[in-house]
View 1 (cartoon, one colour):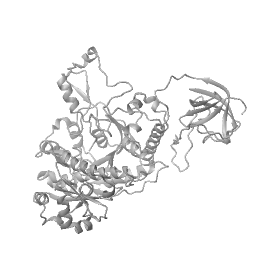
View 2 (tube, rainbow, N blue to C red):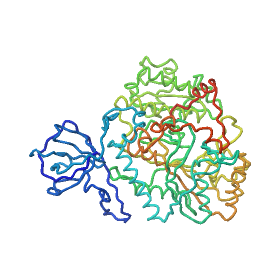
View 3 (cartoon, rainbow, N blue to C red):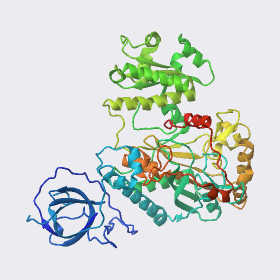
Length: 618
């Protein structure tokens, strides 16, 4: 690390052997809301007069002080100095460019601020390094151009979100507690011991109850950049601690929340991306499942699921007849464009194996060229029986491949939804462009079921999201007779096939909330007695949403993982590789919390490792 006092001279253009591409964003500290924003003062309050990246020919003749790291050195005469803002070439006087271009720094004095031992990796984005190494030396990894860009863009977007919510729309930024109590339902929570024997705090999954209580308290419009905690194990797009833009409003309906979020994203969207176009399109949960096989569709490309059941009502194919004879039985298909050209035999085998292993279903690939020797006898029979109908319904071309499956509606759609994405990956790996990486496709998904059957006991119900979601006004009467058919006032915001936000209109009637908790979900209402009591004191109608900031920034920056948009993330296994957290605590420090560690046996440890959730999120 050096600090330089130098005078600027016009230099000769002379490329160096090693260069680093510069990507950066400017961030305003002004809260004045106007189209002409102030240029941030990046050298205020510090020893430097300028950053390395801002010097141009207009600064010629000025005496400047620069601070930064030596990026490159040649003959102890020419140095490239780097800071967060960019690069500049420094010349140590012997008589005698970059985006700083027409100038060089002629050194007057130089002071070594600190020496640097040999780095574990070069601070260059094109240098390959394992993620474990990056996380172990995270403070060095943060010096890279891409990490600097990601974190500064995140800061810029959050600042503009604050401006939009607080300055333009009167929201109140309120901090809510981190130490709370156990909440029924939802994700697993981290447990924190207290000094009272047998009593524990829980870290909140979200500020859900607090923001509802703030509405009861008359705050009307609440907002928070909230830290949230979920003990969900290892998933590639999850962290045990994460950040969400948390919002709640009184006297609002679903359309009001949606309009607010569309405006928020439009206002805070980076200027170097294509503008956000509003309003966002919307589809129901049922439509999303039927056409895309998922509640978070990637609408950037086609290959939609098509119901072809009617075509095969009189078929002689056994497994199709069997499927249609059962309740909710259907026949579904997707068309893979130019699949015959790009899919290999091993890909087809892998697709069929995936269907059998994960869904216990058969997938039948149909090649439209009848002379293709990959077609099974069943596929050839189907082409003879209904080939023209398939071509018409699926709008297929000669080299396309059809994937057909038969079974219960939800299961068949979910399977083809997975295969749709898998085939898109295969095609793109072979040069076919299906999903434009520069396109940001926002989509609202609405009208979710209020309840789902429990996997372990389908006769019982569990909440599809959380127990405070209000039922759809048209379905309230079904709560008392057929609760499994009730739709909710929940809405998800999807971007390019990833859920980036979710919210709902809440239950504000204490009696209805008590009925759903106690009768439908069979939860212990004592855990939520404080909320039920508050709702009884004239709670206003209210609703809200939470935007997952980490996942949003991951998509905006094109980062491969949410860990690339968080300054100090946990590893895939939930560990901090830099500090080795979590760590053990001496028994004497556990004593005040009335806790004694019981170490697992070898067999328990082996079983735990076998059951470790290491597969990507479905």
